[in-house]
Length: 404
Image (tube, rainbow, N blue to C red; front, side, top):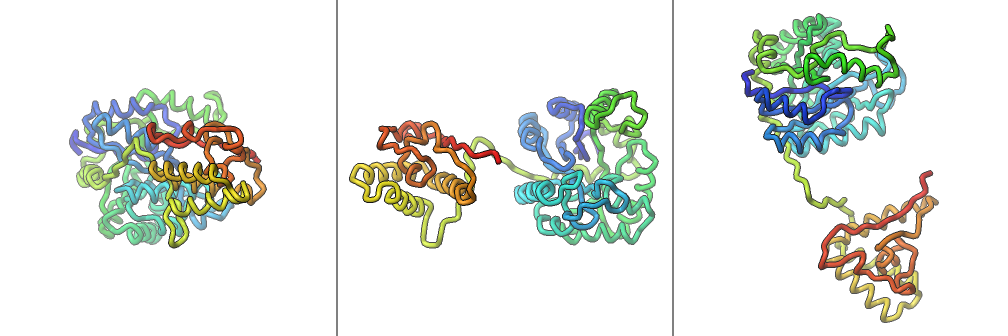
């Protein structure tokens, strides 16, 4: 691992590092790539991707997920762990991996939350495409098995991830922050990696930027856990080495395992996520067979117009046609259908919905779809204040929903 090194960060949760400081430090160390893998979330992924790209550092987007020992739906302590979770580090190789990682993180909160947002083997097996996994830290499935000298369980764990991701997409992760448990884990990990043909990678778990920041990090942990620095039982790290290390420092730690250092570059070269910004990205609305977005919107709008006016007159028909042509020209039929869909759903479930506010009330199409409840013809409201082909911008429908 020469100065052209990729720092694979195992965690940035509860960090005292600001992102711009992290990127600046990586540039100072001449690192070509950097990974952000917060615990259980991807809140910083977009800001990190944009800033790192701007500064000429290749961003590797990932997450250190919590893996339930059994089912993610089980809500009791397991394996003696109050939170019932092991750690696994996932990195996005491409856009499909990014989408799958989003699905995993989301399901962790919506389906598996128990102290932490958790996934399980079943869910992971469904969303492994495009991902690369590092076996994880001391609190990982593999790490716990190695510390328990349970070689059979360690091998079974490794084989599961290799089967799901492909052998080339699973790396055995080793760390050294001055902890004896980590050295014990490494002694068990290297023979296992050799026996199963798993590549090894050295990573650096970063919770603060500089070596002298450990005190500030302890204070931050106190804030997070509701403790004070005077509390003897407060949670603290058992080492002061969880800072961003240089290539030289990593070489000093892992010089006897040169492949583990070279593999940081190999992983960085294999992670090639591309994200583009500044584009409007609308949900894709699935229309019935035989329809396009525009034809289905017209069908619903014409039905709604008859519901509103009975036998609509020429003014209403002409106005509806004119609006539909503008909507078609600007490519916003799908937007109208999505809004119509969730408002219809809310009303069908008895969820109170407001009559609509702002310029959207000037749209007869919105009124016909029952998106708004204010008659634009009766009150002389202008559609052009809402959508105007001479000034292309996203429609803005202000809709109020009951918060219960």
